[in-house]
Length: 86
Image (tube, rainbow, N blue to C red; front, side, top):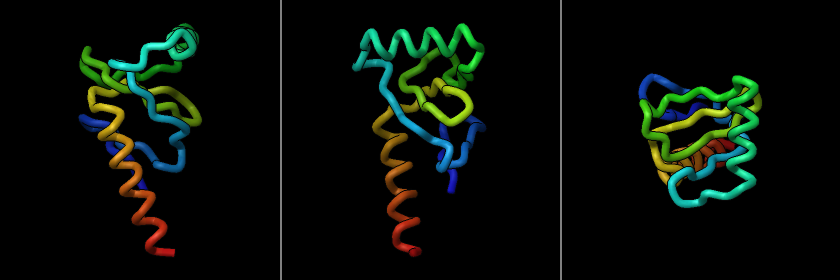
């Protein structure tokens, strides 16, 4: 299964480690993590200058213009669908 992050970006759901919010949950830990990832060129910004969430994968971090709640709902829906098939 895949997770649509917005625009033309779709990633494998199995590579998603975490989905976080940028607008409302500013924390020193998240800020340091994102700063470190940016310094190591491991951030892909697909937000068109308006990041609302970040998606941590096993390879990079994506900044997305879609809210973390919407992304989590999409991922949850996909997880529920996978479980129904088993």
